[in-house]
Structure formats: structure tokens, C-alpha cells
Image (cartoon, rainbow, N blue to C red):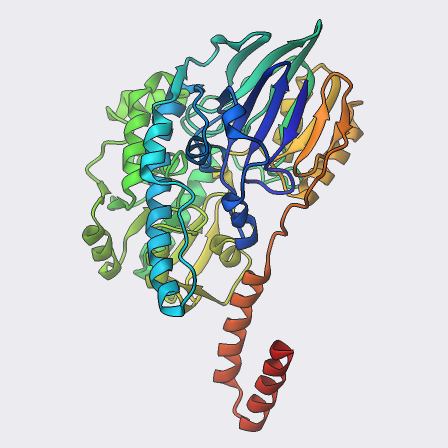
Length: 520
């Protein structure tokens, strides 16, 4: 009875855990790595296991960092069922083909450049055809229902309150007469998040695999009204300047959360009646999934439907699907634009940033976690200029943040959820967090509870019957930032230096020294 950690250890992406129980092998999640180039390079590596030997996959929720490598798994020979909640299956049916299309498009563009450079052509991690084959393997499970996907395993999907359809997995494994209750938290939401119901609790476990995305961070005590007031203030301030409010927004959950709150503010007349554009075909499709499951809404969203008739259908909400409609937004002023991706790594948001970052009247509003090495994180950390599509863009727009929209529980929220767990028979494994977050959270757990805490390494395996590590090779998780991040930063600094330094002798001397270092 082993568990191996093949992702989301030392980072917040790439969730993938292999469980071996007797003759059966199964995965919990199979996610894509996101962030710096060195981290994303792991997506192209061979799996640390043989996909043909995996019997089935259990998926906690639809986010790409938990599901994005499922088509690669299928491409490499996996043929078993993929179990997830009904809403998660519906969301994945749009997210995975979108991920495949992005990869095929980006590889096509890179190969055009590489051909001119004489560089070997790249191959997409997987294709749209692989994604379609993956969708056929989905098996929908109702939240709260018990399933037995193989002998000696029972699993219950319980509401995690993170995004629509998200679940934590409450499972019982039996091997050679030994029974273990193992809980995989997936990603846990905090209380009072828009639309989704608050997470359920679990009373006990032998093994708890717990996320720590915000394990070292306590967000300001923002309740719903604080969040609404901040959103209204940012919007009104930007429109008063005549600028655009650009919101990098994850297509699933965050876009719908914002529409929910903007509808409330307009109904209250707290903000002007203004057009709100959702510039993401994917987000439009996913919003339709939200409409399909009103029984999953929390009390507030249910009440809003009763007063407005529909949570997302409003004449002020404009949905743009075509590229031409998206490009037309580059010419507007006084617009509110929600576009993905949420970390600004791909998609239409990069075009909106390119056309608005240099404008002092515009605002870029972040409403979600920004991983190290992403464009969003660079902007959040105060970058004065960035490179988008190979072009240097000066940052003059206001950079704002409303952390209350995060779908992840913060340190206090995680500790509150853990406080309802009366007993942990063996260990808590801390995952889905950068190392500093996992380390600080482990200290907090040890201060408050007498639980045994483990911080696993990438590719490490533990024997759950003995609660000890198996002696297998491990690899280091790639750093938060890599040489490509440093290169981009250096290029920007060199450009600024060449513009500002008037002394030709000094310019030449420094460039000669740099050239000498590189050539050596």
C-alpha cells in the first residue's frame, strides 16, 4: 500500500499521486506543471510510471494543474476510466480540448520561428484528438455517493468548496487485512466564497494528503461586503479616469464569481450600468456548465437567481467568441474586460495587457494566485516593464489586487478545516505548496495539533502500512524562477541601460564585458 508523489510538491502545479493497493494502481489527479520554463519542461518528460499499468484515475476538480496531463496519459497508453463529479466532467470536456488547442497553436508558432533559426521542430504534449479520446473515458459521480472502482477500495467524493464540482476524496483501502482511511484534500476553498457551497469536513483519517497553497499566508479578513466594496472602488476609479479595467480571470470559477458580484453591485446601483465583456470562448462555455447545475449554488447565489431571474444572463454582459471581436476591444476606452488565462501565461489576456499596460488610465486587477515565474507574478511583484510576444511593454497602468476572490483557503482557513479532524492515525503529507509555504504550515500544525507531518519530495514514495519512506530516487523540484526568467529580466535591463546611459564609452565597455563572459 504505497503512495508516490509525482507533482505538486515544492510547487502548486502538476498534481499527480500514484497509489498502489495490492495489484491495483491508480492516480489521484494528473495535472500540468505551470510557471517558469524549467517547471513547464516537466510536462514534456516521460511519466515516472507506465501509463498502461494504471487501472483508473480519480480527479478532484477540473483545473488544468490537476487534469492537464490526462490526454498525455491516454496518448501514452492509459485506457481505464476517469472518475470525477458530474460538474467536473462537464468542465473538463471544455478545458482539455482548449488546452490541446493552445498547445498545438503555440507549437506551430514556435516551429515557424525555429525553422528560420534552424532549430529542431517541437511536438505538442498532446493533440485535440488525444483530448477527445480522454473525454470518452469520463465516468460521472454524484457528490456524496460511494463508489468501488476496484477490489478493496471505497471512495466518496465530498464537496471541497474550491471551484464548481470540486471534491476531496475520502477513501478506504484494504490490503492483507490492513485497512487505511486516506483523504486527499484536493484544493480546499474558504468559507463564504461566491456561488459554491462551503467545504465539508472530515472527522478522522489515517493519512491526510493536504494542500498548502497559502500555507504561509493569511489574507486580510475580507468578508463579502469588503470584497464588493473593493471591486466597486477599483471599477469606479478606473472608469473615472477614462481607462479600461482589465481582469486576468481564470475561465472556470473566477470569471463566474466576478459576474456574480458585478451583477450584485449593479442591482444595488453601487456601480454605473456599464458593459462587462467576457473575452474568452472557454469561459463562455464553462459559464453554461454553471447554469446547468443550480443545485450546487450556495444560498446567496440561489437567492440572487430568485431576484434577477438568472445568475449570468444580463444585457450588460457581452460575450466575445471570435478573434475579430476580441481585437476590436483594443480600440475601446472605459471597458471592463474579463479574459484568461488567470496567470497571464497564454490566451487573449496577453493581447489586452499589451494594449493597456502602458496606459496610465487603465487598471490591471488580479483576483487569483499568481505562480512564481508567470507574467502575472512579475506584474504583481512590481515589474516596471515586461516582454509580451517578444515586445517590451512599459508598465504604467495601475496594478491592483483583491485577494478575497481566491478559491483556496488561506493558512487560517486550512487550520480551521484541520481543526475539525479529531484524529490522524498516521501522518499528514503536505503538498500543493511551495517549500516555504509547506514548511511554515507544518510548524503551525505542530504548534496546534499533535499530528505527525511529512513534507514529501518529488518522486518520493511512502509505504502507508508502515508510514515510512521507501528508498527510491528523488529529484529536486525546479526552482520558482529559472534562467529564462533571468534572461527576460536581463534583456529589459539592457534595453533600459542603452536608452538611459549617454556615455558611449561606458555602454561599449559594459557590453564588451558581458559578451566576454558569455563567450567564455
